[in-house]
Every structure is written in C-alpha cells, then in structure tokens.
View 1 (cartoon, rainbow, N blue to C red):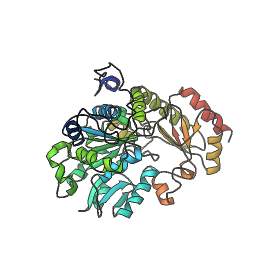
View 2: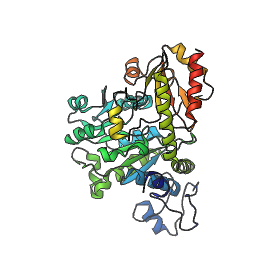
View 3: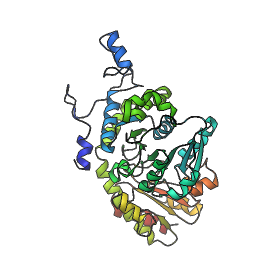
View 4: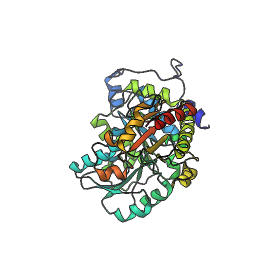
Length: 408
C-alpha cells in the first residue's frame, strides 16, 4: 500500500463484532473476565484480553497497532504525552551511572528532562551537531544510547541517520530518534538505521491540536547485549521483542503514563489525514520560507531551501521536503514581538502540528528554563520566531506575514 492508503488500512480493519470503522472509545477503567482463571491468564500475559486500562485498552491498542504498522516496527507503546514517551524510551534501558549522548539543539522540554535525570545518576553528554565526527569521541563504556531529533525543533538541523546509526551500532549502542517533526510521511527512520522511534503524537499525527499523547516504536532490529543492558536479561527470551516487552511490563506500566482512550481515539481520527495535511503544510512552509528570503531585515531558516546546509539531507532522507516548521530572525526581541502581534491569521500559541499556523517566541516561552548556551545551541535567539505552518492557502499566509512585516 502507498502512504495514504496505509493510513486508512494498515494495521487496522473494522471491528468484527460491530463492523465499526473506527475502534470505539472504551472509556472504562477495568474489563471483566468470565472466570478468575481467565483473569489470571490475561493479567499475566498468558492469554489475549484486557484487564485494566493503565495496562492496556482496546482503543489505545488499535492506535498503537496502526502506528506500529506505519513505522514498520515490531511493537508500539502509547504514552500520556510526547515527553512521557521520550522519558520512557530512555529509562527502559538506563540505570544509575549510565550516560546518554544527545544533540544540544533539542526541544526545551527534552533538555530539561536530561537535567532532571542527573539527580538519578544518569549523565548526558551533548554534541553541538548530530554527526559521527562529534559523537565518536564521547562514546565510552557507560554510553547506553544516542538520542537526537530527526529535524531539530526549532534549530531545524537534520540528522544523518545512516552515518550516526552506523557509528552507534559499531559501539553496541542504540540510536533513539524523536521523529515528531519529520513524521512517517517524510521518512521511515528504521529504513535508515534508527532503532527506537519516538513521536509526540499530540502534533502532526493528531493534527487538530486536541489531544496530548506520545508513542514509542521499536524496530526489533537492535541486538541487545544483556551484559551491557542487564535489565533486559530476563526479557531475552522474547528475542526481537525484548525491548518492547520490558517497556510494557516494566517502567511504562509501573510509572502509569498511559494514554487515555479518548485521546487515542482522537489520534486515530487525525492519523487518517496526516499524509494530506503534511503534503500541504510542507508545501506551504517552503513557499513561506522562499517569501522570507526576499524580505529585508528577516533571516530565514528552513532545511529544504537550496541555501540551507541540510538541503542535501532533505533530498537523501526526506523526499526533498523539509517539514512544516520555519524559523525566522526579526532583528530584535521588540521587532519579533511586533511581528507576532501584527499577524491576523497565524495564532500565537505553544504547539506545532496543528492544522492552523502557529507562531511563538521560543526564548521567552518554551526555552525560558534553558541557559543562554542551551538556547543558542537550539537555534533560539532573542529575535527568533518559530512558525508551525498549517494548511491554510499559502497566498493568505504570505500576505499575513507581509502586512505584519511592513507594519513593524
């Protein structure tokens, strides 16, 4: 199946009992079984079925299956938020004394998370750029994961997955990729060597800005060394499902960061139009970025522009597209605020992936807890505006920004 067909039919079919074309919202906490013996089997993973929504739920399971099929993984686990997914993907394999190598140009919340992990004895070594050249000198016996965003948010650096995964694998370390800003529409990261993929499905997968959620997908291809990753030893019997089995039966289950059935349903609804939305948003983003190139006093950053250093990687990995985020520098914080306040269509809000265009001043909002050095590494300056481009008509978006820039 091609992409848009797979969104509707991959990993999913109408319910056999009712014929419902979408799995209904099973808004219950617990599920009854016919006997104590059957509930024991279900609870101990020895029979299919559902016992308690924190552990599994039919609506959530349907969403997980659809994303797993889309990403070509061996299993997926949905979480209450994108940050919960990032956290669980790492803590599933980390323990005190371990180290992670991560891109410095990460989403502000992820940077804050790595700071929080220090209290548990987990250290993060940051690289300015996600390249094998910068990562290799930092790898040691304590390194347990390399973590990066596929398209950085908001610095828009594109990671070379083949290069970085080859290096990580040569040292017996998995590559965990946050592919939120790329989406499966632009790339299947497993095809380029990634081992674990994380999405904040609140964003482009949902598309409507109505549900917070996240999801972790396992490729099943990484060869886990149980001496290096001692926590996986008891799950070795599950073979290629070891990581996902440990995740579902361990820290994800025990921390309780499960996805609500209602949010899972809304994500499944949004998922079905993701291809159409991403096609339009990426097209709009390129048109808007090209417009900014002609604006005096505006500096634009978008990876699919021919002037971008990441243009070749967009061609190689992302089907020639650069995602749906554009950043600009307005010259000063005052000018940035005036530009934002002068917009009539674009909404000043802290989200990405909505059907409508959203703008934000990152330095004073989502990076307010980051140091100046962390902000600069993330491509956040005092005059930076991040634009999450929606599906409006490109001509209207260009005119909106044009009139606001002229009125500064």
